[in-house]
Image (tube, rainbow over all chains, first blue to last red; front, side, top):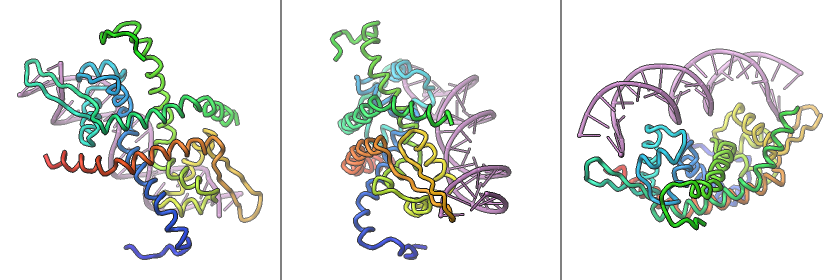
Length: 132
Length: 132
DNA sequence: CTGCATCCGCTTAGATACTG
DNA sequence: CAGTATCTAAGCGGATGCAG
């Protein structure tokens, strides 16, 4: 299957681009993890402080139980969120960002800054485009 | 940031969190724009240099004509990509990042750095989680 | 309280064929 | 070369009911 049928691009260029292509690929993986509908909101919420399940549900408007559970599971699986179960009745489960999760939060804030800085430009571009 | 020392949810806390909630919301908008399956790869590709349609199709493995068109339209609509049509036969259309698009690229690179730096941690966390 | 199981509609995106 | 149009399959996510 893997036949070298793409000699169109020069070898040197290919090598030089390899690192960045790889990075692009990795970023896709990252975006696949945090780019879904709810992960970012949950991470941002947990960035404020650790929360319980129901607190999170209240804090993230519009999220369903099902999606909150799924989102937390995914984040926990990726080592971004720590889940702590207290063996009491009624059940109590605390969620908090891990150190890895906090480094992500920092990076995400950079994206937030970009968003806040340029959202107006994008909205304007959109309006102009849609006007045609 | 939060001068309020009480962790209870009150009006002041709500106000103080409004800015960050808003930022979270904005980032969701941004992620809705660039967080799809192909936008980032296309932006990264255009970050190297301007490209023609078919060149991009070759440069982004796996993308279909349909999705490349849709992705480029979206990026153009948001003012991130400039589309230049040359009235010649056969048709020639060049795509390039706008200055706004380049600022995004810079931010995306920050995310790339994070990805490259922590992807191993995530993979490890995943493996450990899946082992259970 | 904190989930899991099920059903189901909607959106997304891949494949394919066609056009200027 | 650079798209558009149509069909279809897969997956996301919402609502609801049940359980430990």
